[in-house]
Image 1 (cartoon, one colour):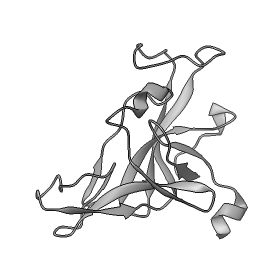
Image 2 (cartoon, one colour):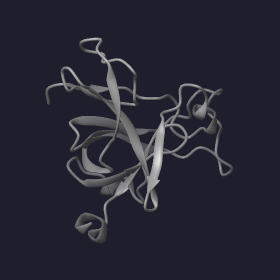
Image 3 (tube, one colour):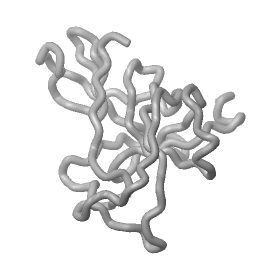
Length: 149
């Protein structure tokens, strides 16, 4: 996968991750906010989150709305509660969660929390729908109706 750069915000579950380094979000299309990346006009590298300059050649990079669907490239389970701050435990307390890289059609991989009902259902190559929001993006298995749209 030539030309892709992977960057990730910190703590996937904390609202505190939405501080000054939070990933940018473009306007929503339909019911889902889109991920805002950037593409270099010189060497065509695509990055997420968006940046004004290309990390490869230093040239200018233009904002681009990234594809909202992709496939799971790799993943892991976060079994230990992250340090606080910036982590803020949910009301019911910490529970292990899956975190993975979703490979988008835009030739970029995006780190996302995997919203799945059962960690045993997670498989590399599974189709996922990625949404932006505060902190790290979230991904969930793609439904048949989403695949057709």
